[in-house]
Amino acid sequence: MKRHLLLLIATLPLWASCGLGGTSEKEERDKPLITVSIEPLRYFTEALAGDRFEVTCMVPKGASPETYDPTPQQMMDLSKSEAFFRIGYIGFEQAWADRLADNAPHLRFYDLSQGVDLIYDDTEYETNPDKANAAHDHSHAEGIEPHIWNSPLNAEIIAGNIYHALCDIDKGNDSIYLQRYDSLCQRIARVDSLCCDMLSAPGADRSFMIYHPALSYFARDYGLMQISIEAGGKEPSPTQLKELMDFGKEEKVRVIFVQPEFDRRNAELIAAQTGTTVVPINPLSYDWEQEMLNTARALSNHPMP
Image (cartoon, rainbow, N blue to C red; front, side, top):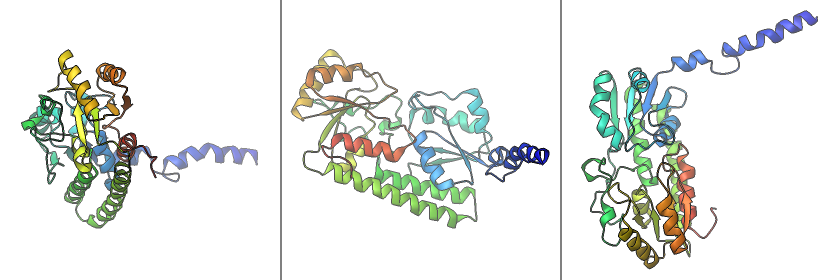
């Protein structure tokens, strides 16, 4: 009896690996692959693709998509992908577009910025006293603000573009993707509603400061003023720092956002001189919903519902 029991226990891992306990490693490897440029796109794509695709991200955690260079291994992995989903105007996408295409000529490229109302350099949604910070990093193509995913309104457009791309790649399964698309849009709408409630509450901030101007579309969505510390991809001079401090006081700025891939010393200097609070955010996080809500909560004097 004991011998039979030991034999049963010994064979359990084999049963699990054959799929009795879930998806096996072999099944996971056999899934078709989609590569995306940044983690928020992986979040949206996985929400729609479900278990029909494996989704991998090219820019790793902590790296800047403005300047990132793919590794040789990533270039090899990309050649095994069915498609590459790009955000549209991020620096490394622009710099590497031709080489990525040459490395994998069969690969289908999908620009997920299609249909988005883009912000250009002359917008008023990024501003400082002399409008110098309306200029973007030199790697931003055509003067276009590339951080389109940091916006619930844009997120729904991005989700729609992914839905159409998946229907194109995996023909005959439109109904599956439509159901997931509807579910994702409901989640995005909930995020938008919660952000609206927090940012329209009495006492909520109407202006904020940020090191790298990644929240231009978020500011546009909710009628906020974004004041960028970085100007044209460069750190501010002492004179510009003084102007930023004065302007921040004038606009009653209470919060300075900092991102993990950028130096926060200037933000901390401004905060020390003005009594503002440095708040870490990660617009490149996979957890897009939580990041949007954390940003809105930081600008509201009321807790999230």
